[in-house]
Image (cartoon, rainbow, N blue to C red; front, side):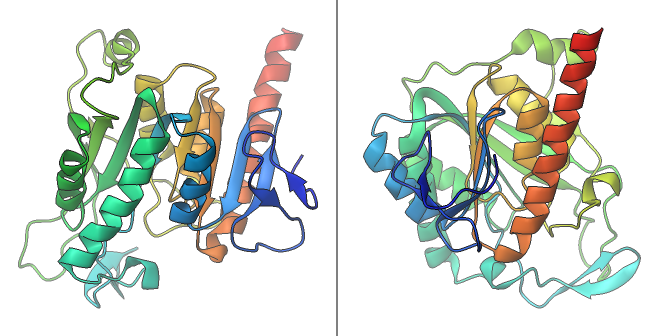
Amino acid sequence: MEYRTREEHPIFPNVVMESSEYSPNKCVFRNDEVGVWLYHANCIEFMDILIEKFPTGKFDLIFADPPYFLSNGGITCHAGKMVKVDKGTWDKSQGAELNHEFNLAWLSRCQKLLKPNGTIWVSGTHHVIHSVGFAMQQLGMKILNDITWEKPNPPPNLSCRYFTHSTETIIWAAKNEKSKHYFNYELMRQLNAGKQMKSVWTIPAPNGEEKEFGKHPTQKPVALLERIILASTREGDLVFDPFAGSSTTGVAAIKTGRKFVGTELEAEYIELSIARLKQAIAVRQTTFDFLLAG
């Protein structure tokens, strides 16, 4: 189910898979039964391949957690210690204009790969989210909501020159103005004690259990992705994450009965993603067997 040599992908036949190494633009993990495919790939190159094959779109939902461009040599607090804000070269700013060009580039491809009524969710801090929102407007996407994700226990601001950063913004947008997006209103109301769910979500950051196999510097909590997926997709829908990281989106998709395709460029997070996806599949299968036995 996982590694196969020089074999075409069942859904994306133009993308060839290899087994021995995490070479760029290769499928490094798959489970056809559950519907999970993870690629070690540059998301823009990968999406260009898919656009040629699926010019009218392929995905019901895209969740993207792009680089925030905040690795600038500053400091923050982690586990009670002062650490540098240096997540990697992928998170370093190239200047406002080039950063925005990058956001336009990957967002334009995501827009093409959404089904006509598909939607995209993009998370970010103030370092990037305003560029993302402007790029969406430039592309003619329809912005549906901006969600404020509140972290109840954020790290303190060590400089004492700013308010403590305790939120991130998540923009929810449809492919274009003609899109008739899906919203599971009744379920969201049910999850909110019978009241309309508001656009401020208080959800704790990932706990130790979610970092069992290692951690990603911008890892999102599974509960956040579960809510996003449940709110805007139906069971069996296809979810894509172009910046998969530790594959939280994939874990949430597996838990909620959706299919998942992810791309991750940094090789160091591939093993982490595979371990988490394997665990989520095993838990789902155990739960399914238990229900059948009952």
